[in-house]
Image (cartoon, rainbow, N blue to C red; front, side, top):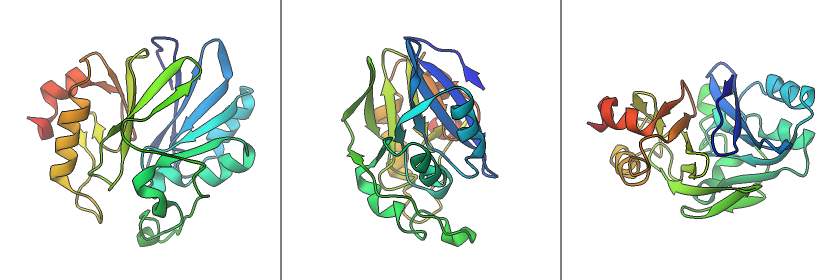
Amino acid sequence: MIIPADGGLLVHCLVLGELMTNCYVLAEPDRPAACWVVDPGLSPGPLLDYLRRNGLAAQRILLTHCHADHIAGVRAVKQAFPHAVLTAPSRELGFLSDPVRNMSLPFGFPITAPEADQIVAPGEELALGSLVWRSLDTAGHTPGGLSYYCAAAGAVLTGDALFAGSIGRTNIPGACESKLLKNIRDNLLTLPDATRVLPGHGPVTSIGQERLTNPFLQ
């Protein structure tokens, strides 16, 4: 699925695996071959096929959080693109190598991923060419989950913090509903209403739409 681009951003979304994780491929129009891959999930074959078919090279693998359905494809992407910078939230490094903490062992398919090449804390910035993405603290679904906001593109990657009409699960180990709701209100709902929300599952929405209609935020 191609998502209409604003501010010089190209976005392609692939829905991966049985848990239907949204994996995003981000690029600039004038440098489309140098892309970021966000949250490569289970069954990454279609993602790798898409990258190869379109002559794309992953420069960065960006993780919003480190649950299994968002990291399961990391190893395959890293093998295909060894120079891609694996970038993970600073407070979830132990999840990558621990099938219990990344929630894969409880589901019967233990998954590990390589160690991160770069760690990111809330408030730090990453550059995709001329596009600057700022990390936002949206922990609560996981202990260190991050969203990534690009003002120039009017878009935010929310992982499993905020969905269309819903929020991330908090009835799992390491989750905290009050923390998640506070972070959503403080760090996401303060963004412009027109900001496109690119969630970890489900359809694209907007900050304004979720402010008005999301039942968890009323």
